[in-house]
Figure 1 (cartoon, rainbow, N blue to C red):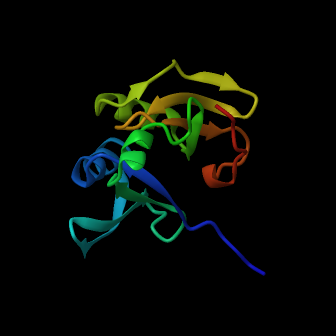
Figure 2 (tube, rainbow, N blue to C red):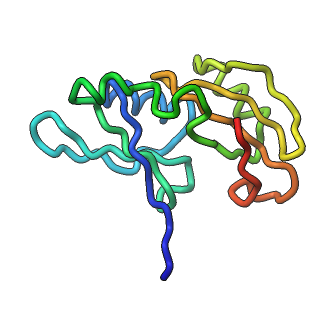
Length: 143
């Protein structure tokens, strides 16, 4: 059986704020934004050039339990890992667009990494893997 991970739901407070953050600060592509009725939308974003790979489904929190979980989907751990081929350029761009980094970049055995928060507070690793030139094929780091 052949399988692949297609996406993950990320709870947000507001669709449009989340789209703006991901497309501007992280330079993701808006893959889909389809109205579902009742104020709900099917919104998918993905790293540029990866529109047919794994994506994030941005879901506006609608229940008290969902609202309580916004920004804490990974608890106090890194939830997602954003691989890059040019750490310095992406780090600079993200900081210029208001992304909050929780630490200075550090060099680890697996690559260059820094933890940042998305617009609702979930933690991510920005990671340029050491070794393979294709960032998508590098090792996964724990943050």
